Length: 520
Ligand code: BES
Ligand code: MN
Ligand code: ZN
Image (tube, rainbow, N blue to C red; front, side, top):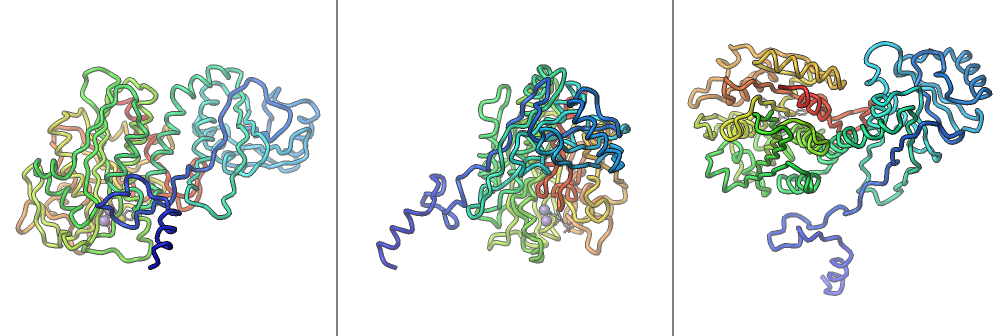
């Protein structure tokens, strides 16, 4: 190659300092250092402007009083009658050319069910529907402070986008402000600033981590990203174990999963203490930054989705960020068990036996059942070193849970009814719902290995999600209240939901945030 051409090519490429090293892996060209396009800033006010795009949240067919002037009210009532709009939850009516408004959207929240959730959802849907609306956006509907803060949260989650890698035809959507109207605008804004904004930030962190491709997010860069998100947030301590440290601790199960990859494994531990010395609630997440299946290689179709196989860990870090940034009065530990599952020349093989930190041995009959392997050591480490009051696992663990529950529920497995009930309640409150699944004692007998203590799969089928959960539970001290959430069906939205634009959902950030605040 011509020397001058080489120089030119190098000069025009983006080489980030972290890549520009002798031990560089891959092309060394980062896809982009650009940020995502701007979203709308969120404001609060007591009265709505008389122009722009107006979203009116409706319980039924009756317009909330004193929202718009008399002439506009009359025109809207005529439209409501003509369209037979009843304000049913999830319904909407989009109108143009009324009064001074460019657009008025009547959005149903219904009169039944959880009003806060319905308002959050209607606002999230409005954020998506009005994405390309050039005008300023106003959301109104007789909202009190909690409802207004929920509308802000919904809007923030609904307007999430991931477009930093688009360089051609990147349409910068309008960034005029969205204003939420409430007679308690001041306290609504205070609530938003002190709590919900941090939750939205946690959800966005989780979605970013899961959406980023695996050439960008691998164990080391996951750690970097999460560190950067926390910055110097008060009362947060971050510890990271690298491979030599984990080998020294005899974490053969976790390190074994990553041994086929050039990207070394990590165990990231984020501890937030907002409530003194009490025992923390520990949340340990599966952080497989890419799951090829390893030597038990997955088929090619859809394999790209396995870039999000670290969603459990990402959601946990999102929840920790929310709790820490909102100064919640809780003690929590978030853990990311980070590996890349690759079929390299040093990869573990089907039939290999590994020893965990606990001393227990595992016969690996399928290298694609790797999530349970990283969780085994991570759980052991946390129980031994952090003495948690309860332990929750979150993992995209099995295809089996997708077959059972699809994207409506995460599977909940627990040995502790009180913890299970608290998780179910947090799920209902946040709209991130769970369905309890069984942990029959015979499942463990089915997992007995001929040559080790336990095998990681039962060949020839069986209740896959339950067997996976049983395996994980085998490595948790029976005296620690424990639950496991299998999120393989809910971590990715194949189609947009009210607060989840198509793509990584961040499912569980809200649930864990609520659970931590309510758990004692
Ligand atoms: N990450 C997958 C599970 C998964 C499947 C997540 C589909 C999201 C969508 C996990 O590591 C896996 O490969 N599980 C295997 C286990 C089997 C080998 C016992 C599965 O479910 O097929
Ligand atoms: Mn797998
Ligand atoms: Zn996996």
